[in-house]
Length: 353
Image (cartoon, rainbow, N blue to C red; front, top):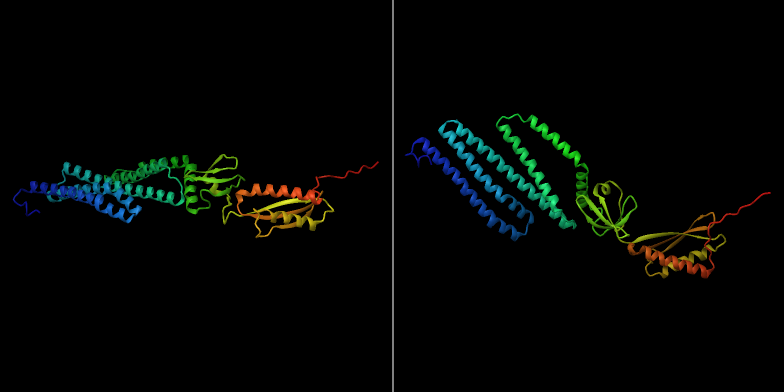
């Protein structure tokens, strides 16, 4: 290229070639932007790869900017080397070129990370039916930008030989203060992601918390989990509290549930007859499973009665109260018909004169 413009004087020739280099960077950036917009995005839509589409959308504008920044920086470097001069104007241009290059690379990295973060949340939400909080996504996108541009600022200051130790110390103290202030929120967000990935329960499952509260999971959010209780009220529980405590998922391995009932009969009752009546009651109920077979065990001699344990299974745990009511009503009716007495607590008091 220097031979092409050899008829020009050295300063004019160098400036012209530098302008051509910069213009070439702009043209190359336009070509890349055109390819990204038409060819690559069309191919990604045909392949239906959401991840590649997100990455291309995130990289399209940053790559355009970074190519222009590279063109400007190389043009300035060529101008400095060809003129063999380090004037104030060239130093300013070189500094501007370096700043533009670092910022454009930071712009690209922030776009890629933000795009991958948004794609990850959308993918997790699609697989787990967890709604994505748009406000949270935007907030995290801003946090990512701040972190990336902070790193870029430290690189630029180091290039200009500015002492950044005090700046880093201030930033460390500020980040520590923010982390301490948002400690519970961050813990809940991390716990929410772990619940989504580990899947101890899903939306629609019937769970029992460590506190004894039960209900159906309505929503697993990034900060809280919403549970619909039997009182038709919504329990909003922080994810960190659920993650660190024991949770009983009554939907796994299936909806079958074992019901245990303690029944007391009067001393002197025929226990074989009592057991036979209880089994007949369970087998006659259509909601009680025949396999495993209902069982009755004589467990203890109580203060006022003989205690028996009735054990039976039902198909759907959501019907346990209704089935228990049916079984208890039938036990009362059959015991009265068979002359089996259910005693109330009583004591014999002896007075000595």
